Length: 342
Ligand code: SAM
Image 1 (tube, rainbow, N blue to C red):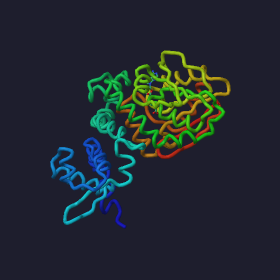
Image 2: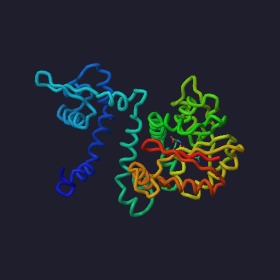
Image 3: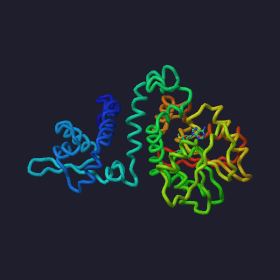
Image 4: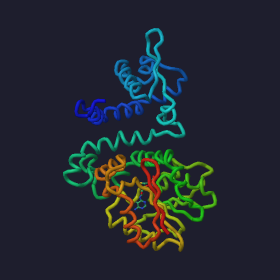
C-alpha cells in the first residue's frame, strides 16, 4: 500500500473535511432528509429542488455528495437518478426522528462554524472569540451563548441531542441506585436527568439551572408525564440544594480552574454524607495524545468558553482538592468518561 509520503490521502481528506461538514449542514437546513423521509419514495433531484425551492443543478450536486459520503442512496431508473435516505439518515438526520441529531447539526452550522472561522485568533490570543464573531462580551460566556431566545433554544437543542446517543451509556456506567436524591447541576433541558430517571426509578432527579433555562426547558423540552423536576438557581452565586449525588456534565470544561474548584467545594459542603459527584466530560488521555474528539473539544472550549478539556488525573486532583475521596473512573464511548466520588 502507498504511504502518506507517496500520496497525502489523509491530509487531503482532513483539509477537505469542512466541505463535507457544510454539505451535511446545508442539507439539514434545507430539509432534504425530512423531505426524503416524508415522501415515502425515492425522489429525483428535480423533484427535491421543486419541493425545497432550490436550483436543480445545485441540488443535484449536493445530493450526489450525500450519496458519496453514504448518507443517501441512489438508484437509476430510465436514466434518471432517484435519491433516498439511508437508514442512518432517517434515524439521525431527519428532524423529528426520536434519535435526531438535527439540533446538534444546526448549532454546529450556525454557531460553532462561525466561531471556528476565528480559530487562528483564538490560538494567537489564547481566548474565546465571542466578541469578534458575534460582537458579544467574551467575559460572560453564557450571556453570549444565550444572547437571544432563539440561540438559547438552539443551544439547549444541542445539549439535548447529545444525550439521545450517549445518555444510556452514561447512566449505566456506574451503579448509582444507592443515591436517592440526584441533582443535575447545570442540567439544561433535562435530557441526561431523564435518562438517569429511566435507569434509577427509585431516585428523585432534579435539574438545577439558571431561571431562564429552567423556564425554557419546561416550555419546550418537557413531557406531560415527566419524571424529573426543575429548580432555578445560580450555582456560583446561590446555595445548592442538598442531595446524595450531584451530576456535573460538561460543566467543569466551561470554566477557569478557580471557578470550577469553587463549585466543587460548594458541592462538597452541600452533599449528604456518603454522597458523591458524577463528573461527565470528554476526558483526554493522560498524555493528551487523544481521543481526537476530546482534543478537538478542548480547542472548541478555547474558541467559545473560558475552559478546556482535561485528563482524568486532573479531575481527580480537583476533586480531592475540593475534599472528595475515592475517585473511580469509567471511560465510555468516544466522548464521555465518568468519575464518581464519595
Ligand atoms: N449538563 C448539560 C449537558 O451536559 O447537556 C449542559 C451543559 S452546558 C455546557 C452548561 C450548563 O450550565 C448550561 O445549561 C447552563 O445554562 C448552565 N449554567 C451556566 N452557568 C450557570 C450558573 N451560574 N448556574 C446554573 N447553571 C449554569
